[in-house]
Length: 491
Image (tube, rainbow, N blue to C red; front, side, top):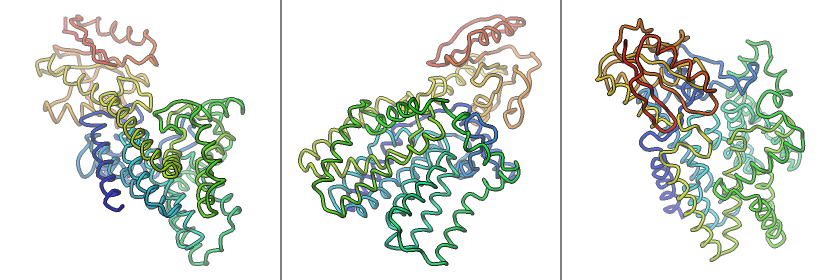
């Protein structure tokens, strides 16, 4: 069994690298902002404690932990975003080991544990998240650690320390995991474990406070506006829906996750529920307890319905590991049919992973223009079309007037590959996005790089081209999937 788990870990690494190589990751404004923040912090050595805002509410902040997390690969290997992607893949691949151990502690079954290891290695959802540079992805490791430590805590109170650490880190990386606090309280009331020693309680409290200390400092700095905004977060983050609409939305998203994002069919939810109910009637007390625990793990995000439903594809990012644990257990009960089902699931997952190559993290519904490989192709075109002579650019991006994405890419990629960077024709950029110096329109070649996303109204594209036409002549339009580059020569 240990050899299969080790092999699954290696396969998880290989499958995830295959899914992103060489530049198949999404770099939108959020990613560029975080990369800039982290790389600037490394260069300036000016440590930070205030994290980015959460959603559209300026009073709410994520923790700063993700910026420090990014700083590790960027400091060691440089500002290429793929360095951070491969680092993220390495960290997330440890889920094979974590969930395998979790499975063994729940069921003491070799068949279940082997299924968990293999499904985790080939999971389409987990593979997609591993190549995504965003703060929620790390919670795919911290949240399972939280539930593992909750399961172990009644037998050994020192697991409470890991509970506190994983709870704090989950909140640090993604603010909405505050819902795990009432989950912990409900679990404690339901199971009534033996009270830990004063020493264990003290260490656990200290660990939790340390893990969220930057968030506490942020609240103090801003007079606790974030705390006051928490209860109204549903009106600011995601969709402002009625309760019935929230429930419908939740079931739809849960259906997607229940199929591990490959069998998007609402009937799969009912099949999973029906199979679980049947199994509960035929298994022993110990296994029944483990299955009920997993069902509670899977259902726990429903607490967020009180605040509101988020329209983001990662809304239920905490669910896939629990789904894999429960699926694997149900498959192991089916014996030969279960092994056939495992082969089918692995095959379909890998097929979906293969389809996503060169298309970014499809599960997260990215714009084609946000895929790094497409962006680098546009950059290469500007250098080649200008015969490697000085040139200037303007960009039409989402959000408008902020040159974060192209400012970062020309800095780490254009400068290193071609030895210089273009100048900038757009409006003044605030630090750290001002990596391109302002153009005085003395260059021979000019380009307007346009993101083709439907999020940008056409009049902004026309305005950028019209402005360029005032002093330069349009010579060519080059279409790269998701991006259009307009070429100009000075009049």
